[in-house]
Structure formats: structure tokens, C-alpha cells
Length: 146
Image 1 (tube, one colour):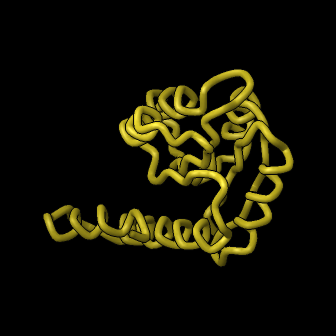
Image 2: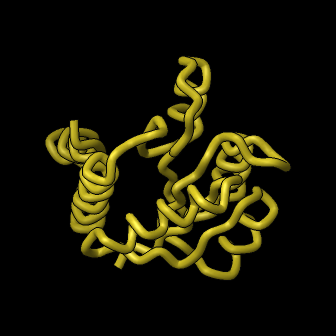
Image 3: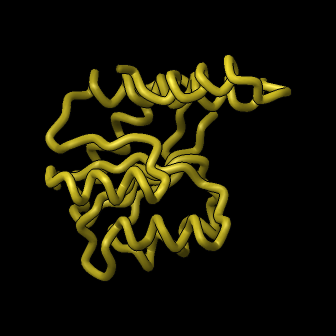
């Protein structure tokens, strides 16, 4: 099971995302939090594999949170879920290590497709024993559903 933590400032939206995650085979929503501070605490306590992270949080920008987690070596992947559509934010998410970026609102099918692509990518990454170019190409291509 891929343990997923939903981080969104709107508790209703977080609940919708959590319910959707729970409907995807191989995924478990281990919690919902509504601020960066609560996310840090939940990450330390719950050890999720994946964050569904909003950019707009009340106490800290979600991308700043992601960068600090990366800098600290926190072993968690992150999919950005946000209404922000400006390219500067998208580029920042990419350079900060986000595995994907979904613009709100999005359908359940869209989220499921990206979660399944992420799941496949994780499986390939965990099963690879060497990193030849074919393996690397496959890993980069498997990160997204297209």
C-alpha cells in the first residue's frame, strides 16, 4: 500500500481528495492536514510515502515546505494539487522535486490515472537493480500518465 497524506488548507477539499485516494487500489490515505506545520508533524508521525500537497497553505507556501523536506532528506514523494496555474509555480514545483502537478479542479479519473502512473513508477524504481539508460528512460517515462 502507498501511504498517502493529503495537505490542503480547505478541509472540505482535503476530505474529497482523501476519499478519492482511498478508492484507488494500492493506496491508503493515512491522514488529512490543513497547514504546513501540521504536515510536518504528520509526516514525522505517519511516515507517508506520498503527499498530495496544495501550494496555498495558511502558514507556509507548499513549495517551500516541499523544498525543506527535500533538503532535510525526508523520504516522501510529492504530487502538487493546486489551483495555481502560473508557469513560475509549475517550474518551481518541478525543480523542487514534485513527481506531478495537478491543477484544481480535476476529475477522479484524472487523479486515479496519475496515482496509478506514480504507483507503476515506484514499482519500477524499487525493482531496478542497475541504472542503465534503458532503465532510466523507463523510469522517467513512467512518472506520468501522459
